[in-house]
View 1 (cartoon, rainbow, N blue to C red):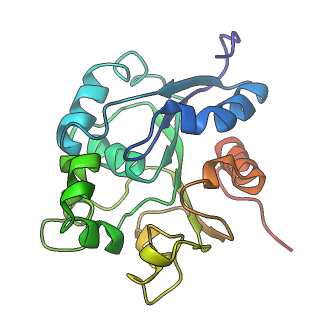
View 2 (cartoon, rainbow, N blue to C red):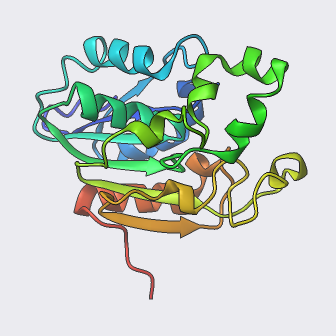
Length: 219
């Protein structure tokens, strides 16, 4: 964490069945740029998304919520947690956010994995909320109403997951499913879902959005 008292706070929220370790490389890059980094682990496989989001908002996020320069970077389900918080327990100081591969319209992989007992056991109750069916929590949320950029991945190498898609995807989330009408900027990169947060181009785009409010233009 940066010791600069004037630094913008940035909260990192990992995805399902991950920990804060998955975002450490990104966190170091943000720290090097002078951000005050809060890389938070939460028990993603133990509770439904609503409880995870509420506990974070009332816990680690409470001291930061009124800062007028509060930033977020989320990966996968972390973006849905941020959307739930802003829908039901909004943070007055939310300034900018970048979502990496958020299943904003749900995930076909989650649909398929719901039918696998081992997958449900490994991923917990949140898995059943991330699909594209009638019980999809992302589809129940309000459109994004905060300044947000989305980076989608388009590279998939897992043949097991690939068969669940008939369109471009990152192995877990379809490119089109990352979209939301409220997004300020959106970009597709040739990266995998599971490792995109460690990709140099993803990190550079994230830094640029947090500093300027849009992704760097490609000529």
